[in-house]
Length: 178
Image (cartoon, rainbow, N blue to C red; front, side):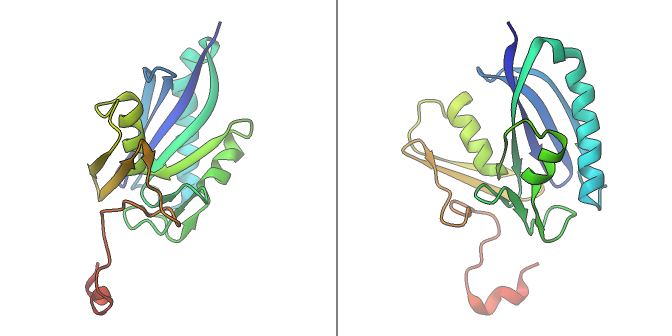
């Protein structure tokens, strides 16, 4: 019987890491590509797809590929889009879930803010197992945060709940933010 696996993708400002995991959270195989070198999102997705397929090939006959989860800076779960991520080379709104469905039309594709995705992963498989309430702080190209209360991620109305990175505090200071 084939083992169900999901593809997890972590898009960072410098690199993108990905891996196939089973329902118990065990890595079967993993890979990565540079993020920052791709000025065009379509070129990035094409390279990502080719690398994913190369990593999947040796285990393809043993697994049932059931879905894709993506964590990205400014990833909006509600819209399936990356929105104006300052740490990524692509401006504006990127409808990433829809774009990934072009490569994997038969699979469900989910996107969340990378820090929120990390917090969910820690709650289910990592050091926060059994914890009802905690905060996850991520440090990479940027600073991010995920807040779990009563074992639920705090998303907020627009997907920005729990964000602890670049926070706008006073209206008269916005011009000084870089």
